[in-house]
Image (cartoon, rainbow, N blue to C red):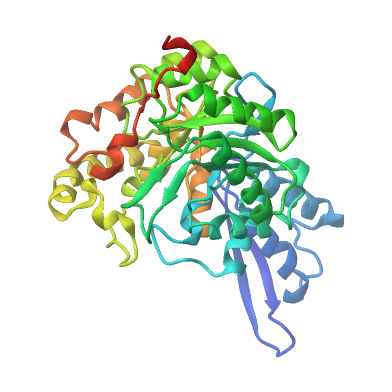
Length: 416
């Protein structure tokens, strides 16, 4: 096909059996051919009383050609390794937390299942949940959704360690004791209705329990086949090194986005030195770079109302960063959310972002971010558009900051 738009003039055709006739013009852009359009044309052609569309249905060859072209437009999500122990996942994961609330009202079960199935159909096989989401209901919903998918092709990650006391995260305890870990693992397996967990994270570091004790129990769960691979979340460099010495860590889950980059100085180099992958949560800035609180108001149910960066005062200060990313996105022919996500995706093959969403449209946009190609110069230009020292508000509510990059006591044997 030549570049530019092609116009195919089709003779007057009957629309159905009511005698109505009118000309049909079909416009196709060479560079962008959506599979939905292709499917509609192939499906509707017989209904429009067209024996053969000359440009698409010559002996059905062109019709098949159209289908093939449509399929070629489907984004192929690459497969990457998480760590050096053999875990392979889709380059783009799916964070399931928001499906049961937190950023919005909880979704009905059938909607949750449909979204997860749709994500899988697009090539996402890496799904992330936790026992504290809901609490517990998120794992149950994810487990039900997985019944509709081939288990052997899914990589399911869940977490333990945060104990909610009350209805929100403001009253929580962190527990990394061996007996608690085992009880959590068994409970998660039951809720998920699975025989094993692909990737099991310590959600936050227990500062009262040596990481060696926590890892010792996790190692036993691996040996028993209940867990395949081990991960940490928001751990300090020292905790990561000590944990990895007990049993290899496959992934460290950390917040990483254009306005949350405090892991770049120590955590990222350490993980690469040890062969540990980085799973980036909130890669679109908790929705900020998708326009949340800038282009649209916050839902009444969202926890973001208490987030430092989303207060009325700080949002006004931070809007400038959204505007800058919006302009750069136009330059790259994508949305601001896609550019923000592409920035994370392009940080390396050992980086897997896990954006979440409750809308199929946003899911499509997230997958589309894989087509945004960025050079080193592009990455720097995008980074420079959001200077971290100018962002108003810290990246987490104050009560959660003590959980970040936490250390643990030395094991008793080393204290003698």
